[in-house]
Image 1 (spheres, rainbow, N blue to C red):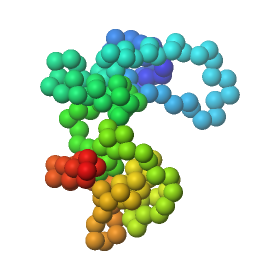
Image 2 (spheres, rainbow, N blue to C red):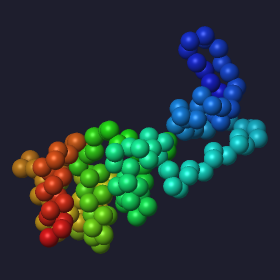
Image 3 (cartoon, rainbow, N blue to C red):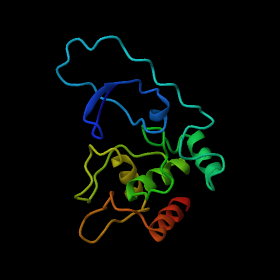
Image 4 (tube, one colour):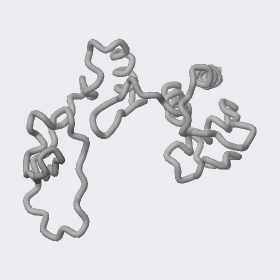
Length: 164
């Protein structure tokens, strides 16, 4: 990879498999307009299916439950191989997790009254399903606010409504 670091104003060619980058590697993109990219780089090692998230070691408090959700296909984590267990979760993400965990069949047709949810959004089918089943109602202003962090009460309500 090409590393243009700012601390000594130089550009280096180095391997993304170097020890420093093992925990810092996020991803790569092709530079637009390159006609001869040269030989393919070494492949990124496949993640360990028993330890897919670099930030969820077996000693982490919720490791067992995160792994159960991962192994059942409910959560996938982030492209950089992390789960980000300390990061907040938004309303769309928690709705997906709840519906997937309860194995609720997803709706593919219908419309929503929410001005902030489009049919092209990755979470559309989850919001549509939850709305059609009466799990969610949205806000009085006609929005669902999918990107807002969910609070415990909202999360519990969605889970309880889904479990009925």
